[in-house]
Length: 204
Image 1: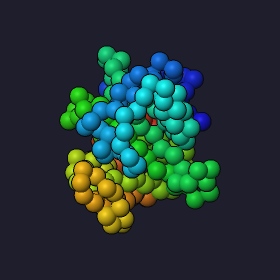
Image 2: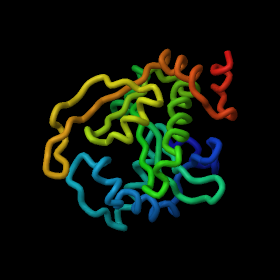
Image 3: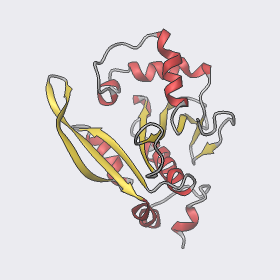
């Protein structure tokens, strides 16, 4: 189920719209997965060119997430990237744990968009979906992403040592996470969109 798939722009932050996918998004998603600055950091398997015939599959991956959204600029409507979360294991929700993901086109790096989108998505997982834990994985060497996740309150929980073959060498797969109680403390100390329902916690 894709949250907001049938409601255009169901989720909004100060500058971004998080919405469901449509068949018209195929070319933009394909461009993200084929970008040479993006793919090394999001591909676990062999990194090969993705073809136009795969756009349906890529859209389906977003639709099949527990929450899967296109990120676009509110002002221009430009495609920014993808974000959302999925159960830790397919079909398993008993432990109320999800894995969050995000990928942005390089032209939107450094604008604070990743922070803005992820702060909303993580908050939605805890506040609306009743999750207990949100986790993620990131490749060693992706310092920009690690810094973002730490800023959002995630802590390193462990590493799969030398688990990723990338650019001629082995890298650790870093596992990070945040628990509901930690998130509630985090939002009391960090700015959240005033439009978000959980902004009331920050002022309590």
